[in-house]
Amino acid sequence: MKVGIIGLGAMGLGMARRLAQAGFLEGVYNRTAAKMTEFNVTHYNQPETLAADMDVILVCVSADNDVLEMVDAIASTIKPNTIVIDTSTVSSETAKKAAACLAKKHAAFLDAPVSGGVEGAKNGTLSMMVGGDAAVLEGVRPVLAAITARITHIGDTGSGQATKAINQIMCAGINQAVTEALAVAQAQNLPMNKVIEVIAGGAAGNWFLDHRGVTMTQGEFSTGFKLALHHKDLKIAQAMAAQVGVATPLTDMTVTDYQQLMAEGYGDEDISALYRLKVS
Image 1: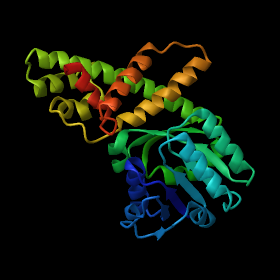
Image 2 (image 1 turned 45 degrees about the vertical axis):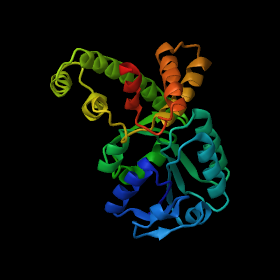
Image 3 (image 1 turned 120 degrees about the horizontal axis):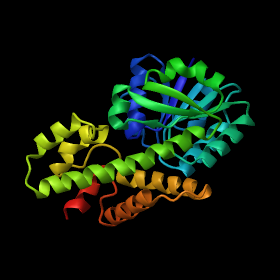
Image 4 (image 1 turned 180 degrees about the vertical axis):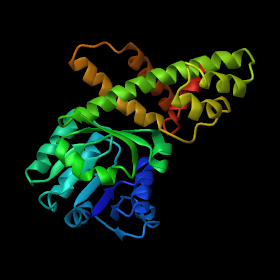
């Protein structure tokens, strides 16, 4: 089974390294060619040529238009029975469009967004939520096990992305809670490392506090999940919630906060940069 990956950004690079270490990776494509040089596999100049050679193709790009652009490109050369796995975070509607496009070529599609951050991609501990044919998923599960700690089949095409939108709403709430609480602690001149350590060990402990608590209180926001990308994801979540008539006041507040931070030039920082607004 020949496996290739399209997209070597912060998440894609970590996943590609894990696939290479596991002996699965056969080819890579990235718009910035320099990112491919570390991999001792075939480097492709176009996604179409990669698609012609591979049995399984992982896609990890930033936005809906990027996914559809890549799918349209690979559909021109893809072989029947190829499996395309999109790990990007996009809308359910985009996933369904991609699946329909590939179905015309008798290729399978799984929408398989992930959660766990760049650390999870690096360490192979991502949580993957999958929409699409369960039998197709079972066929590629050994490949996906190289990059994940948990793989859950949610349901039909698009359900993986819908679940990821729920994840992103929760992340917004956690970000708001953690940054606000730590801002209050800092305003009281409490020893921040001790505060974070003791809270992390109790009922309020969470991944975000563990991995971003200390760095945010030290004014360090360079690593992790880009704020502008979470903003993009929350806009998807807002639209999804609006379709079913559910109010999302916390998500709406986070989108507004992110817009302010992006306007101030912090869009490429980690989402913990929300702390800037809490202590200002």
